[in-house]
Picture (tube, helix red, strand yellow):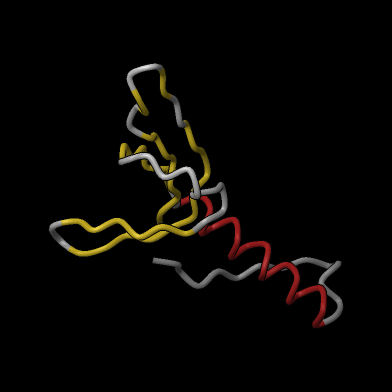
Length: 88
C-alpha cells in the first residue's frame, strides 16, 4: 500500500515540477516493492524479455513482465525454460 507522502522543496516552484517529482516518487515506491520471481516452465522460444505473462496459482493469478530468460538444450532436446518475472 502506498501511504500519502508530503514533500517540501524550494525548487518545486511549478505544477510541472511537482507532477514530475510525484511520478518519480510513485515509480520508485512501486519498484521497491516489486520482486523478480524465478519461474521454470516448458520451453517457448517465442517468449521475449518484456513480454507480459500471467501465472496461474492456486490462490489466483499474478502477471508481470519477463525480465530474464534462460533457454537451453542439447542433443536430447530442450531443457525447461527459466524466467525471471517481475510482480508487485
